[in-house]
Image (cartoon, rainbow, N blue to C red; front, side):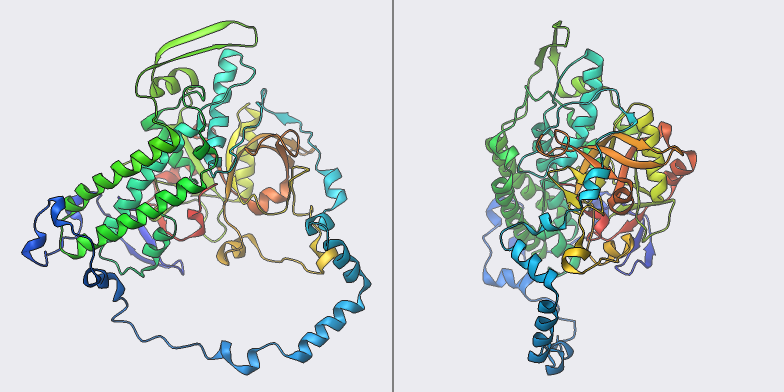
Length: 520
């Protein structure tokens, strides 16, 4: 419930306390009951909120100073003047290139004007280090399940190699169901954990902004696989709402916020943790029903997996469970993996986590080993040279030419079209909200120069076969430096100095820190 204990960091990254805390409910603060009428734990005593009840959350910041309107920003001297506009217009029209660009942008996507032809030529889909087998690119469609897709793409190669399969796909929707369900419970436990906080508390508001999302992190994936296993897509196929998750998300989010109101009200009335969790159980029943209707119930009975391989040989495996299927037909040891990140704001070779980030209560906590970007590259190369793909997280929206399938800071020439340049460092982009991890994919190859240095990387995405090399992308090494934040590796190939970091007490970043972003 909530975050695991350790050092806590305020927004200014200053250590303010260090303590060990227990996940036991006995250590949670107790509330006195306001009156005898609220002492019953029966559902009959949980009445709809009245205005008086709601004022518990409406009357906030009572001990804080009265806010004042900003003076400087509204000062007449701060405004845009007519003379300034006239001057800007004169300078704009004095350069014929601006008028030419304006005419072209009138009927074109302006990114077309920015595209650098030389970058298109330089970033070839040719690599001298490749994994032995690649599969057809999958398609997450209108959903934010990239982290699940990327992991399933890693796992399926184990099965395809084992049985000599041309194509194979695991059910992303199956883990999507359980992740939504577990995240709903996680959010409600966060609300119970934070029930004594002001409703306007920054962490509370951050969690309420998006109680659950499609996105996730590698350690969340490990939790799901260890508890629920995996199944072939033929056993649990896609549904409309798994491929188009917007309406389902809107429904679940609205209900979770609705439940948060009830839990906070009951806590303020003096109900115990046990009372709140009994009410939570009713809420989870409703969430399960919503997910079962929209996504379909996950398999409850053993299933049979039947297929033919490249040689037309027939295989049939009976009495399969999701857990046994993962163990027997995939065998990827998720427990023996680590996430290595590049966060230039913080100390290297240190262990980090993010407050209130997770999906399964009692599961594996989020853990990041912070290292230099060149360490991430060398470890990724080492894994690719062993014939294994690499799950990674990056800010995919930056400098991506979708049709050509290119990720390269040089692919768009903003200076030629708009006469502007961007000068922030990677750390500054994180601090000022310009960048964070938004998407997970997998590396399947890399091109090294004569000195063994990476030049470009081959990337398997999950947006279908349109664009790039049938959906595969090429990433320049400079793009890796600037916009890749995380790689996942087996402990067996990670140097001991990195593994020793796992013995440290994790530094807890705030819930709203950019390293808490979920890949979608």
